[in-house]
Length: 250
Ligand code: PEP
Image (cartoon, rainbow, N blue to C red; front, side, top):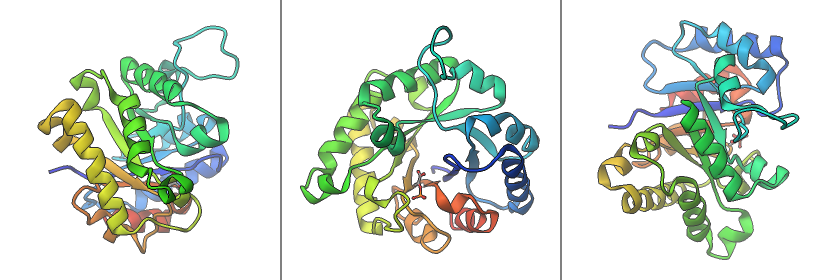
């Protein structure tokens, strides 16, 4: 049985002080009976203070991005070891805003995922189709390319530290959520793909989060689907009430 994983991606929101306040409120409000693993993903600068504020709580801290090299002349970039040093235990790789706003191709996402896993960080590999791809019937083709590119050749011990987040680009930050049927269909497709690549046991253990305008109102139904193992949450993770409401739906 896969334990749901609910992670809040703060994106480029929250000062350090605001992040600490939000993290504390979340930890205080988290029920002891919570059925999900819970994490927050602050901007880089808030990671150390938020990790410190959450020490001793079950809430994990991740980072939103990582560079693939360990050190050197890469102005503006942050290595996996630096993230660990700051208190992060996992990192997002290939979030749709990195892919489509910043322009990261699959090859770069793969290098980041590899670097994170080799350094000992866990990773969330984000995948998802754009609206025109869905409308053209290309959803599965896009997911196939992104999942294969992200995971091919990973050692089984590394795969077990990866979560996949299915995030249809048209549903991120738009208020448009995939229907439960659309989410389940895409998640099952990804799981079958991973079964073909790594075998049944690895695919059965893989957690696949849904992301895209998840709210406290729709979380329970989405996470109630057999292949939806939690949520990657943007906007609704910026307030403790709404994020705690989502966690309660797991
Ligand atoms: C996200 O940031 O990955 C996300 C899904 O955002 P939102 O929940 O705001 O759609």
